[in-house]
Image (cartoon, rainbow, N blue to C red):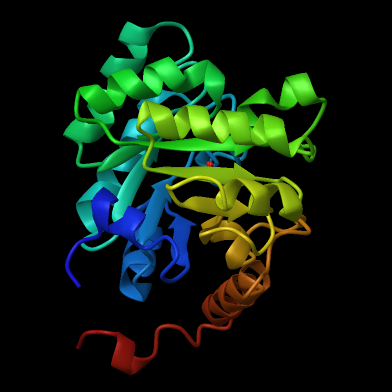
Length: 261
Ligand code: KIV
């Protein structure tokens, strides 16, 4: 199949669902690529699932560059998309272009910015300089303070469509639709040429994405209606670590086979 490109990804619309997941480090990138996801997003959700913050706002370029560097170096087949963190693109066009360029230099194939009409001009500038852009509308986690929480957005499907069309016209190659009613997601998906990738947007989108740690149940207490948890990873790993600790205490580790003469 070869490496996923922006062009190939757009060509999947209407053919088969696009598969996407987040990754932040060597292990998650290795796993995501071994499974063969189309898109690996180095999400600013790293702030919450890697660094333990309660929102995505605290993470900055320094940490995101570290995550993008290792994921881009590890992934061989998927399209690697780097998420632009809060205040890395809002203050000025120059700062946004410079920061997006830093991700591309590390090997990302595209960047993602949150927002609709308000970022259209930025999207168009980035694309014109050779930086493909994935849009992100509906519930934008970077705006949770304005919403008063991570609340459902996009009930007004006409407004959502205006944002999606603005991004498409600006040259975005795909759009993440987050936490919107299924009917709004369907309305937008059927009216734009570029793929929509849903997270909490129901089934009528062109693809689905979830956060790596949510799929594998790695963080206790993080439960969302739109997440399907495929593993109770935290409990399984905890149990393995408890057994290791027990073996140290009982001196059954290491055995002669695990030792050198
Ligand atoms: O940061 C992230 O992980 C994201 C996805 C949830 C789409 O933006």
